[in-house]
Amino acid sequence: MADAPVDMSVTLADVELPNPLMTASGCAANGKELHRFFDVSSLGAFVTKSVMAAPRSGRGTPRMAETPSGMLNSIGLQGPGIHAFVENDLAWLKSVGARVLVSIAGGSSGEFADVAAVLRQSPAFDCVVGVEVNISCPNVANRGLVFAIDPLASAKVVALVREQLPRDIPVFAKLSPDVTDIASIASACVKAGASGLTMINTLLGMVIDTDRMRPQLGGLTGGLSGPGIRPVAVRAIWQVRAAMAEGRFRTVPIIGVGGVRTGRDALELVAAGASAIQVGTATFNDPTAPVRVLRELENLLADKGFDTFTQAVGAAHRRQEVYR
Ligand SMILES: Cc1cc2nc3c(=O)[nH]c(=O)nc-3n(C[C@H](O)[C@H](O)[C@H](O)COP(=O)(O)O)c2cc1C
Image 1 (tube, rainbow, N blue to C red):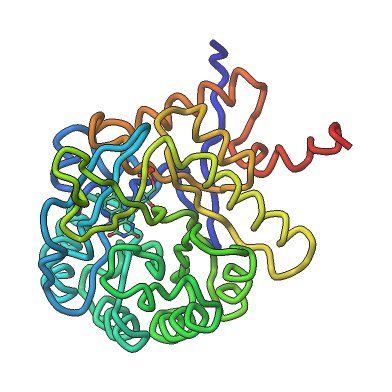
Image 2 (cartoon, protein in one colour):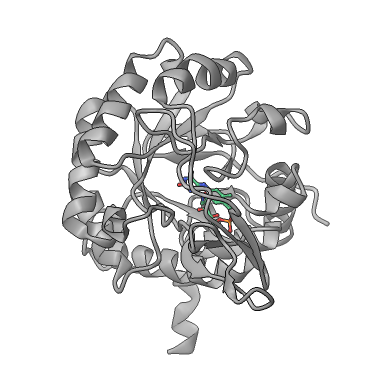
């Protein structure tokens, strides 16, 4: 193993982070549990569970099902509401020195804006390094509420949230892979003012219990995550990065998420074009996964002769000519 240090720092939409590793929204609650296993301030950023305006109890139980190489969840947007979140969770994350990417959600574009406005007023706002706009949660009762399946609805949410936040706070739009052309949704978000994109949220799936001959999840459908979806994440990141390179819209940083368990998995998303990596489902059976993946990624980059992390971003695009 090479021992030359690799510069792992990365600048995402003018915000400098010491490294590119993050938690994935909804997979590490709001940090306290994980902090027992490692210092959450050592992450590039901690990403919080999507928060809405009012407290919510989420969807009916059961809310988890196993799948080959992954899991299906129908937690829904359970949470304390933005006021309790800023008072308790955000204040705690600030007290431990974490850099926080706050994930917000809403049932309407106006609710997203309201949540962003409360966040901006919070005394703990100075630990916020960005806002991730979850327009892609599949766990809603009405499919029409998934903004990220429609370019106009996505753009409206992004524009309203952008208006509520100071210019130096980047807004990342989190996209769904459950669309025909993800680049057109990405384009709408960037043109509406998104500073970056997070890809991908879970895929809509369903499991049927064949003993009882009925759907396994209380909410019937759920979001598929874990290693099984990694090729979908790689494909989505690749397509959007290629669309930016073709000039279809402005080049913005992509945060990659989907099925990352190891440093090598992370490198795959990075080579496709991701400038940062979130670890979600893997955290459930290894709470140290985000920091372990960071270490593994750094070692792998050193072995491959990279001096800096950013040299590897999108590297596979530069190599594709060998197949032509
Ligand atoms: C239990 C669970 C809850 C999640 N909750 C959220 C959420 O609140 N907001 C969000 O944007 N994504 C949520 N996600 C999606 C993840 O952030 C991530 O995009 C997805 O799981 C793919 O990454 P992974 O395969 O590493 O888990 C959730 C995923 C899981 C498994």
